[in-house]
Structure formats: structure tokens, C-alpha cells
Length: 536
Image (cartoon, rainbow, N blue to C red; front, top):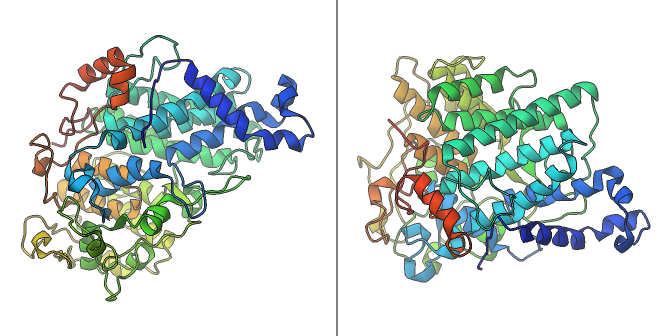
């Protein structure tokens, strides 16, 4: 599918409003009112005029599959054929374009356009509409929109780098891009506004949920949204640690010290679920079972088999031979059937909610902060081990004590049951050697590798976040591609560092995207490092 993006023109907002108007007529019927004759006063009833935009924002951050037994390819090209495969979580079982596609670093323009389009055609026009209607009259509504904006744009900037943020909605013929440091500054500002405004609101009006009808994540619970915003602030703080250590420490400590704080239990986990008259399928179910295009990743097999990880059967299904088998990415697939039935499918149902963020991740972030000497309200070891336990609880995988105490197990060699040329043998330098049990005498680097490895497992299936953290830290070890068709642009040992700017931007915002390339500081390709990608 081809997604068009013209980010600065006012027509986008008009299109978004028209689309929303056609999708919201059922709301007017509830009040026995003809939507054509609805007045401004009627639209303000129950915050309808702003509330209708929130499902649009939320469903464009992680696009779901909208129809039963039919898939929406947006999630597949936005997330699955980018972060999910680049992170090693999942392996592609298809051989699109004769094995010249994202998995082999021959990037497909229609695919890498998708992340930008969802942000600038789906999220940002709705955010702008909410801003105009509520920034001064109902700041708590605008605060929630600011948090959602930050959630969307941090994923987008971590795909591409510089983005058009400060000039969005200005109405010019072109829109300039901000460098990534400026984008991150704006995300922290948006989160701080959301945290402070909603904290004030819940203190003044405890238990009130004015946006309950429109919120598909927390049902309008502002306390949980504050906790989510603090958690996202902590995530973003750690992302910039090698680019701006002082600010990273400040933002992280603020998030943890806030009275409401960050996520601490699985009851805080953020998940997008059907509700309020909106129904959708989990897109991973569609991609795995309807498209037959994705299976367990080879790296997940290696780590989970080597660690005897009890979470494996809750994340993946055993193959017909009773074992777990994953697919290595960037390989030569001549027969799709050879990489479908014999390999492990994803353990996901059509009605499985889409997880945005979990408490387990927060414990691992805090553990890393503690290693770095930050005030994280706990020792690195206690936070690390609580992170593992919280992940086990999330997956209903039983008691984690034996797993946490395992100081011997290491990731296992990988065997491709369809083609032995893709194997990773014992003793290979491609295999990680890190174990599970905490060792307080280890170096900080070894501790951080251990933390990131367990966080990588716990963050599954969000490959976008796992890919970002892999780029930031170099952990965990991920198998390089076997077949590299980038024409030498992306060296195999470097892995993919970013996606190119969309071709649609070159067509409709040429002057603007030129400022983005300048701010990037390198060629617009998959090998140029992002601002925060500075692993020592």
C-alpha cells in the first residue's frame, strides 16, 4: 500500500475531521440528534468535540487490525518489518521482492513511509485539533493529548531521527525539521506538562474520569496516565544517556521521585484493547496466522532455549516436533512453505490486547540507572530481580526464583532446521555468553548487558523499543543478516541504525526534508547514526 504524507498543509486537519465525523455519527444518535444539525453546545456535551480524537490518536500509535479475519498491513510494514525483525524478536517467513526487502537491508519505500505517515496523518492532526479546542478551556484534556503525542513521536523519531515538530500546523508551504535533540526536548516538555497538569487534576478531583468514554488504554484513569507519563519519561531519559548524561539523570530521577511515580505492578501496564464500541484484532495474529508471514525469531529461540526460560510457551507455540524453532532474519528463502509449518508461531489470539508498556521494563530501567549511580529507589540487584519476577507474573510463568539464581545457563547455539547454512554454532562469537544470576562484583558494562538482555526478553513483543535499545547499548547480541542487499550502504556488522525519510516527503515537502537531512548529519540511509546512538 502507498501512504501519502504532506505534513504541513491545513488540508490534513480537514481530512482528519471529515474522517472522524463519518465515524462518530453513532454518538449523535445517542442524543436523538441529527449529526448534520449538531450545535457547538451539543458537541461540548461530555467532551465529545475533543474526545472523538483520542481513539484516532491511540489507534495510530500501534495500528490494530480493524476487521475480523482480515488484516491491516499498516502494522506489518510499520512495526513488524522494521523493529520486530531488526530486534531479533521475530523472523520473516516470506521472501518479498525476491528476498530484496527490509529484512535484507534493501529498504522498500512503501514500507518505510508507514511510520511517518501514521504519526503525521493519524496522530498529529488529531493532537492539533485537541490543542485548539482544549489547551486553555480544558487543560486536562490537552495534557492527555500531550502524553499521547510524546508516545507517538518518540517512536517516530527513533525510526528516522529529525522530525518536523515545532513547525507542525503552522500552515506554511513547507515544514522544516528539528534536530533530534530538539525533538527530545519537546517530548520531555510535553510529558512534564501532562504529568503536572493531570497530577493537579487528580488532586482536585479524585476519582473523576472525564475521558472514560474515549480512552482505549486506561478507561480515562488519570492516575494511571500520570504513572504512564512518568514511565515514558524514564524510558526517554535512559535513551539519551550517552548523548546528554546530565539531562538523562535529571529526567530519570524526577520520574521515579514523583509522588505517583512510575509503573510498579502489572496492574499499571498500558494495553490498547477493544472497547467503547471500537473493535479490532491484534495485528500480530493477522500477520502470523492470516498472512503466514512471521514466526519466532532465531535470537529468541537461542536465548529462551539456552536459559530454559519458562516464559517461552506463553510467547510462542511449539513447532510440530515439540520444540521451539525460530527464523534467522536476512536469509535466502526460496520456498516460503519451508519456513512456515516447521517453525514456531506466535502465541497470540485475535483478541489479545496490544501492549504499549509494562512495569517490568521500568524495573530494568531503574536497575540500569542504579548501576550508573542515579537515585532509583532501590539497588541495581533488587530492581533487576524484581524486573524478572514482574515479567514472570505478567506472562503467568510461575515462580522466578530458580531462573534468577541460575548462574550457569547461556544462550544456546542456533540450528536452522530448513537450511544449515544459517546455523550459529557453539563457540561462535555471534553467541552471547551472559548468564542470568546477578554478580555484584562484575563490571558495570557486564551488569548493563545482563539488565538489557533481560529487559529485551521482557519487552517482547514490542520490537520497536527493543530495536532502539539494541542500537543504544549494543545488547543483547543479535545475529547479523546472512544476505545483505544494501549494496554496501549498511555494513552487515553495523546492523540497521535508522529508516530513510519517506519518499513522500521528498515529493511534497522537499525543502523541509532537506533540513532534516542536514540535521541528521549524515546520508539519508540506514547506516547513519541517530543523535542518541553513541554507544561508547
